[in-house]
Image 1 (spheres, rainbow, N blue to C red):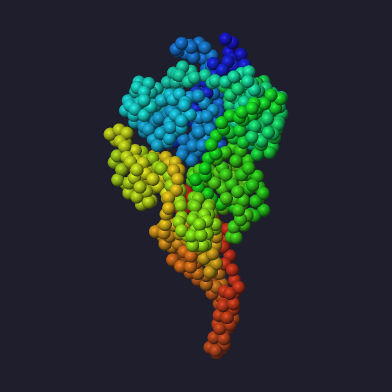
Image 2 (cartoon, rainbow, N blue to C red; image 1 turned 135 degrees about the vertical axis):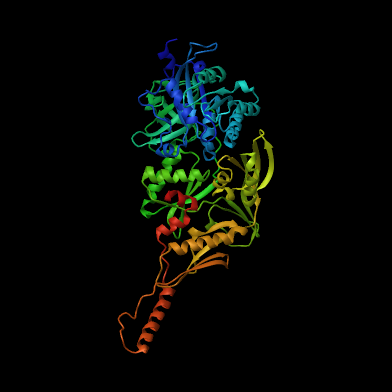
Length: 620
């Protein structure tokens, strides 16, 4: 068959298409393997090739992690097996590995028929490997086990092939051995993808249906929507209809990503590509929506995706209040690119107008804040992250609290906090340290299992509030970096929680309030009062900083007054004159203390609300 015809989008026989994604734990070499595939299939000119080619954002390249899934279309001529010499089209999606971006992975899996499960031959199976494997199994995907980094001196492919085979239920010989760095075994892996992964199934004569699995905002061209065509065919200049909103648009451009956008005449069954309608309204393109043709619409939409539930909430406020509309627009555009983001407007007496933003985890929060500051030029304050609580009052009503300022003042019957089931994989030397850490965070052991002689899987139930701050950092430091963590929400439990208020000069400052466990309340109050004493400049009157639970003060610091030298101009003379001036000053201070308000500089808010870790990172 003529290669040009095979590779032309829209005319490709679905039997010659293979859709797959690469899933793995962080730092097991997904992006490096994707780089080698791009080189071997020659879709990227060798002069333009660079490491982490599919990681387009500066943050991804700096941190060495993948944040966004990236789809790319590659031609491949099979070299071995029954189909040797046949031409194929491979649609690959490179996915993130961190637990905070699991939603990106789940959307990628829904657009594929198969997954390459990658395991580092020097580190073995980690927690996120298991989580991604179970996600792939739920989607009924064909899984190809692959051991990467076999070129490393510390690699133990035989040992980890057994672990992987035991997990998937295959033979150790079935685990492919590759090196994403040197390219060894990558050609064989592409042949296995062609052999093992089934071709996409769809009806080419049915009304067109395509699933939106991602979208991005382009300043000049508007919303660019990435789709996977399931049935029918879409051609340039067709009028398309979004099934959830019934909005109709004209297709200005249609094409594939290879890995740069390439215009084409059409997209057919099983193909992955992009649509441009020129629409600038970012709400028109919803991830998980079904696209069909307006003149011959489909009657049933595709399944879509489950909406992700935010795990952590934080308030984002512009330092300059006039940037509030810019922040709204920036969040709208980021929501298009990151469907897991949720937000709603809120206001704070101390910080003005801003948004209550829901994130999937602390890294997600950090990345979104950094993207808002870099890509949209905003200066932001983010409040301390907290989780969602359900508070039952004695009068029978229930209140959902996403912000400490919403905490009810009535008599409380019970407070429900979210809990997670955490899976920790660690070498058996560190089991004691990990158990100690989990117990100090109010965890309860559900079970443990030895995956091999050296590696243990621990399953704990932990309150989400205890792991969103520095749990992962502590886990890494206690296990010399060898442990890995994955968690999923499992419900709520009743806990003994209290709201700690910070009072400045007797007035509560809502931005500093927090909901903490009763046992940790005193430590939190002391720590924040001490930090604020150093950050808030001295006033002309004494300012008490108090941490209180209800009406009971649990910690106090005092900012001493600046003393103005009123005796400077009073040289010589009688002592009574000096005393008279000092009494007059004392009266003035008393009056100032009654009418004066403590001005808290923005820098103090930023520093007090930053977690200790983020302050340390900024210093580095």
